[in-house]
Length: 331
Image 1 (cartoon, helix red, strand yellow):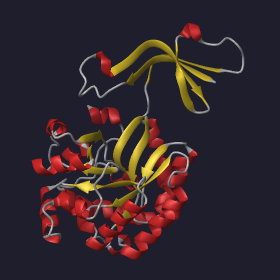
Image 2 (tube, helix red, strand yellow):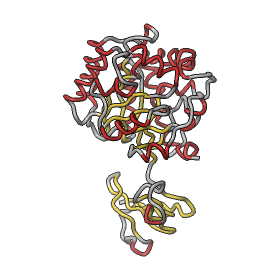
Image 3 (spheres, rainbow, N blue to C red):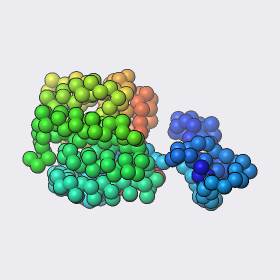
Image 4 (cartoon, one colour):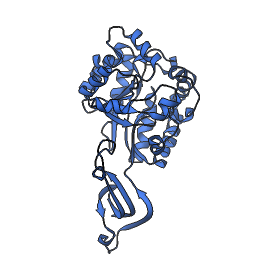
């Protein structure tokens, strides 16, 4: 057994919604007991065992916290962080798509995954919902590196069968075959979860979104992650591409992609009706404050989302976001 001594802080409820100290548990001098890589309990210093065979790690003067959870981040955008782009669509074309093309090389994908996960751990993040690239090998490299570190990661092959550079384009049949192979290889292995990952509605045809919806129904314990209502030009584009839909959210609803295991990044420009509908269906929003500002997308209405009953998680959204640190993002 390992015992780590220091000041321990953990949360019993969301302090943004629950007022007062009932939201947290803080112990100025305590010992975290860890057995076989799992937290076994919290002890007072006078409760520590005196026998041999234990590891004692004295971190007094330091704050011990649970690992941070980043609900939306791109492992393939390490090298485009803080690249200037006036708006979302321009930023994708100028920086993101060219960089993601490099992940066709398995060696580059493996090297980038190692760096990315090391940066997360260096910043205290142990759990994340992650976008690799359209390349199957980028997902394999990512999950292999995460499993080696025993991290809790959710990720999946990005799907794009239109409105993207040819080297990043797949098709419905290829995307389905790749997803099935990756689900069989990684989903539920150790602390890993597979997430269906259509990039966003403009880069997937209705046929590809329908295929993703079928897989989501077939494997009900999968995750699902995509982008939603980040930018006003993006929203106009979605209306042009899916004129039959009632709005941006409705595109995903029609294809069976909204539910309790679905995370939608940004959600800045949703209408009141869309917020209510998304909350009723159980979907969750990923709030990306630094990215929303850096790419000029707008301000997310956190209080408005909470009033609608929508679940919201925080995210760095690297590389649109400017830091891997959840502490900096919270600030």
